[in-house]
Length: 63
Image (cartoon, rainbow, N blue to C red):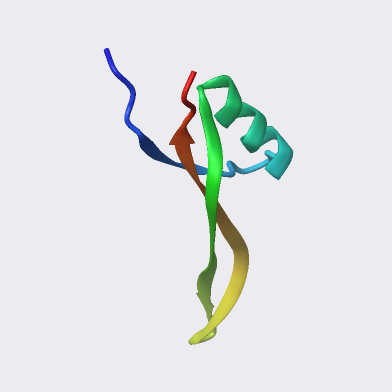
């Protein structure tokens, strides 16, 4: 089975950015981009930022 050339990896809850990058490398990918998105929750009718979603674009390593 062949791997996809590009995959998005999300930093999981309780995982550091370094852990995510190590997981990417273990799966044969290297970081080629980064995307951050705020996650909001509505409290008293107002949107309140809860956390930040961080995703890395992984490109398949040529070996």
